[in-house]
Amino acid sequence: MCPTAFAVSFEHVTKTFSQWQRDNTGRGILRNLVKPEKKTITALDDVSFTVGRGEFVAYAGPNGAGKSTTMKLLGGMLLPDAGDITVLSMSPQKQRTALMQRLGILFGNRTELWWDHPVIQSFEWKKAVWDIPDDVYRQNLGMVTELLELGGLLKTFARELSLGQRMRADLAMLLLHSPEVLLLDEPTLGLDVVAKRQMIGFLKKINREKGVTLIVTSHDMDDLEEMAERILMISTGEIAFDGSFEALRGITGNLTRVAVTSGAGGVPRIRGGQLVSSEKGRFEYDVDLTEMTVRELLRQLSEAGGVRDVEIKRAPIEQVIAGLYREWTAGGL
Amino acid sequence: MAASKIKRILRLLAISAKMDLAWLLRDTKFALMGVLGDILANLSVVSGVYLIALRFGGIGGMSVDEVLFMMAFSTLTTGVFILFGSGNNIHISRIIGRGQLEHLFMQPLPLKTQLLTCGFTPFTGGCNFVMGCILLAVSAARLELHVTIWWLLALLFYLAVTMTIIIARAYLVSSAAFYAPVAAEEIAHTAIDGTWQLSTFPLSGMPLFIQLPLLVIFPEGLLAWFPSLCLLGRPPLNLTELYPLAYALVISLLAGFIFRKGLYYYVKKGSNRYVPYGFRR
Image (cartoon, rainbow over all chains, first blue to last red; front, side, top):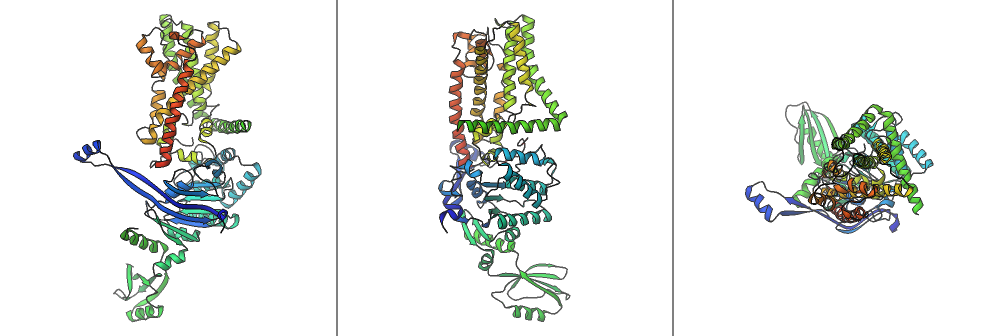
């Protein structure tokens, strides 16, 4: 891949923050007056990765892992301590105004809409500020209105929109200047199932049809798996995994969730499986199918007696990742 | 290049004006209540001083009409302030303290351009400016001032200098919000509005130990009293008519330096605080 084929390049980026430490004891307060205690937090530690044009990348990690810091560095809102960052071959810190013509950033808990104006007024404001040509504006407005079903919302005041509607309107506004790269920080935060499906469907569509590069963070791993082809996982400031969701499942031993419905009184036993829940005669187990064959699993269940139904499915990605987070925390990564 | 920049700024001012007009026409009742509130607040400040002058036949060597002229200048300043500063762009500590600068970083415009254009409200914020113009015309007529093009240019000059001092001081103190966002969120409001009444009081006849600090350390004497007397052709304390300009240059250079340092701190350390209120009116 030639260098210009990268939409985003992060090279040996380090970012640290300092936190003042406070003590509530009298001695601590006095000591703090003389010699304040400072703690250094390494949000990103020599992180390197690239994202190609047209890629859809999930950026995940536990709380405090450095996800939002990465987003802000890419958006030129923070300066790195060390390393080089380029987005569309531009430095977000040195060429911010030029970059913002081609980049779109959305933070799920914030809005760019004007509170006391109808949605369409915010769109017109954006047209003027981004200096969007009339034909591009008309074309994009038509596209987002249709795909995000905004027709009935354009004349509604932003303050009167529900969260799902507001997110749709924000996303629509984000696309009016035809950004080539989108950075979305928790875009599905707080959305109900229908709104989430709509949002995910739309993001996949603009990635597939318009070739927009997307980097999305979310705490909802199932959402991320549905959207993205590649997942970058960060933990305590370091890239802990970079690959496909399949490969991610692979490193955790291909965990499978087995649900057994039983009419007998006792709990069916599966040797090598771990019971994770039981409710009204339905028992769920985690089984590693690289360690046990399906035949062996079914044999054990047939011996258990009283089994009425067996359901075998892949373990939810949430569970795979929770296991990884626990491992990383224990291992200090 | 310069022409295209000016054109761009005019277009940005136009969209701000359009949104202001849209708000006025849409929420007319509330918008007019806001306008009325602004007018009453300003009138109550200036009329108090004017009534004292009326009762005592002037203040400290300034005639009643000269005091009225000074009140007109102060109202004009307030008018320009509201006209261009209705988006917390002058009360900048609110934007910094609430972590809202990041919204500005997302726009493809230099910060200066955004801050210059985002608070322009000619329709809901223009009333004090118009009132100031009327008061100025009345007082000029009563004083039988010989109004020439040079005098009008001098008026514009002193208005620009006064606004520079107000904005520079607001940005200077607001830089504290980069380091202490919660504690300093309202510091610009305290610095501007907290001392506004003092700036409308004629300092003529006051002892030097009161006049000097208000011309050298604090700028209150430069916000209406000094420029009004300059426009009336008798700058006070034998100081040069260009003293306000010198003060404006020094304070804006200092504010520029301190603000840039604060901004660097902000992008280096980030802001852990974000509150949405007051953003996107």
